[in-house]
Length: 268
Image: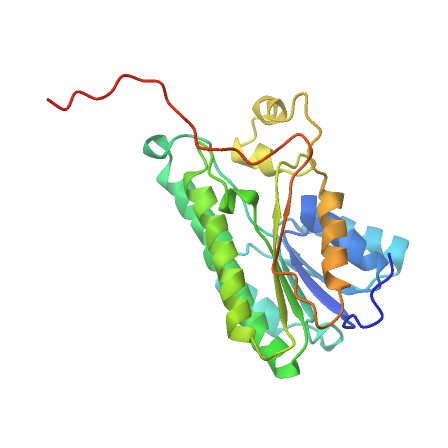
C-alpha cells in the first residue's frame, strides 16, 4: 500500500509496549516503511532481539528504551538523552497498556485497579505531554493511542479496565480540540478481541489454560491487522485526521444491555 501523494512525511516513531503483540507488529510495519524507531518496553532481551531483526530485515535504525513506562523519572531521563539521530519524534504510538483480572468490581484486587490506571491513563498522558510540545512547535506529527472497544462497550469484569480505555478515547478527542489550528493529528485506535499478544495471559496472571480458553472456536484479530491499520492511518493525506477506528473480528459484535433473571430484592 503506497502512501497518499499528499501524506505527511514522517521519519521517526516512538512505540511503547514494543516488545510483543501490537507494538512489535507495528514496529515491523513501520520499519518496512523506512521509519527510524524508538522502541520502548521493559524487557531488554526482547527489545534487543527485535532491533536485530529489524536491522537485518529492513536496515532500520533503532534506539531502545528498556524502561517501565510507569517509572516517569527514568522515562523522562531516557527521552532527554535521545541521540540526535532520533530527534525529533514525528509519530507517537501509545500502545503500552494492560488488563488485570476479570472479577466483578467488589471482588477485585485494588492493586490491579491501580496498576491499570497508572499504566493505561497516567503514563499514556505523561508520555504524550513529553512529546507533544515538540510536535506543536514543528507543526507536524501524529499521535496514535491504542485504546479498546472496552472504552465504548461494557462487559462484566471490565470495570476499571473499560474505564481506562474510555479515558483514552476522551483524551484523544480532547487533544484534537486543543490541537485545532495545527497540523498535528490524533487517532484513537480501538481493537476488539485479539489473541496473538500477551493480553489475556497478563489479564489472567500467567494462567495459559484460562487465557487460551477465551479464544476457543474463534478467529480473533491478529496484531498484524492492527499494525496494518496504523500504517493506513499514517498514510492519509495531511488534511485528513482519522479521529477513531473501531476494529472487531467477524466473530465479535457489539452487544446490547444484559439481563439478570434473579428474584427482586425485598424492599419491605
